[in-house]
Image 1: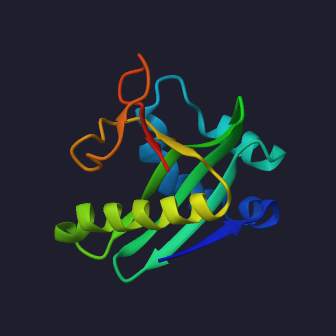
Image 2: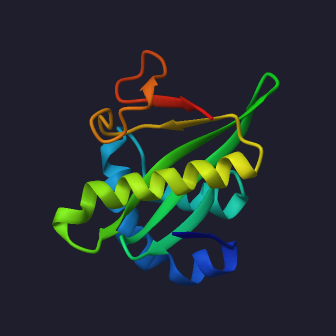
Image 3: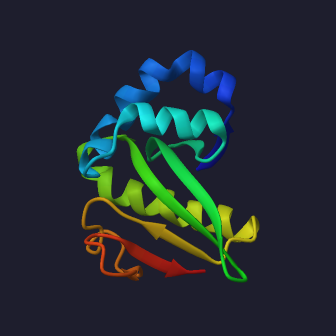
Length: 139
């Protein structure tokens, strides 16, 4: 599984396709709007990663930030397609494993994910705070 940073010029050019892929993930977040996601990507506040491999392909919208002395990464929106419906959960786990490695290599200390309740898919994540569905993993 490879991760590639998508630059703002490519985001602007491919936004209708990107927005269609991200739409299900954005809808899960109460009050989230596609225009806000686009604006944050274009400003550099959010970053878009594209991943592809035999298991499937996907997009991750991430936000890297400091929490005290720690660097954290919040995967705000994750969306994509698995090679087949039966491979969805294995594909998601593979993507997350590679994402963790990518983050660790970049000096990130912890990852947050949210939206849906991902505890069954990612049992090694723990509840992060009082926000329903937000999970955390220390790397």
